[in-house]
Image (cartoon, rainbow, N blue to C red; front, side, top):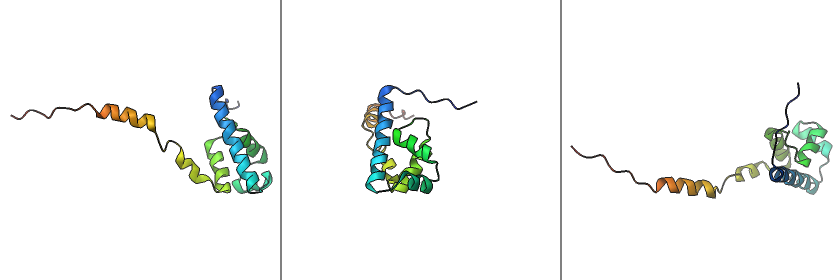
Length: 104
């Protein structure tokens, strides 16, 4: 029994494809071959090619291994760094003030 492929909306597939293209461009800028990167990341060459295509069936851990080889692992820390929507939701909940308990 094989693993099921995640179902993503087209706009989310486009995001993954763009991520894969960015990883491929970073590899090419460094003049690394697919064989070099896959060996250093301890993954197969077909898996690296799947990552560069933005495959949704490849685990985030494998994407991270490739980013480490390219020296881009700190880029993951930028995800959700500026969570504007989350802060607005949090601020909306903070605006309600509770009364202090009555003194006896």
